[in-house]
Length: 94
Image 1 (cartoon, rainbow, N blue to C red):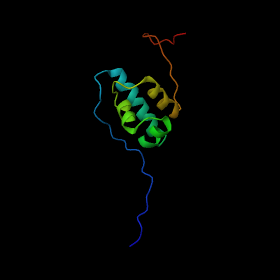
Image 2 (spheres, rainbow, N blue to C red):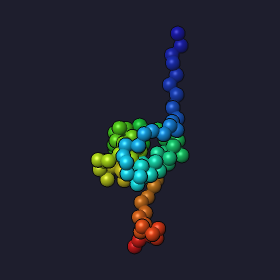
Image 3 (tube, rainbow, N blue to C red):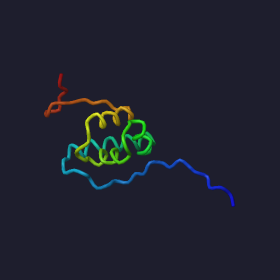
Image 4 (tube, rainbow, N blue to C red):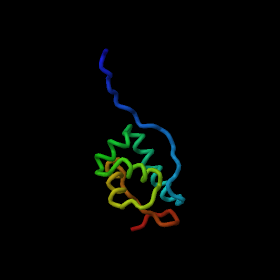
């Protein structure tokens, strides 16, 4: 019997149920998940590089609450994303 070859799986493009009712958290999580998929990265790989569990990354991507900010920032950094805050009227704040 020949050994089974392991292949690198690609990220799934499967939307999940949001973990929060807050549309801002949902949008943030969706942007992080979209970026991860754009880069062809798996949750496990991004989580390890960011120093978080895969479960925490899953929670972040689903807009979940109760995640420490530094973990969200670490994930964004691994995905080569930066934070820009804008005023509610859409203009960049100083």
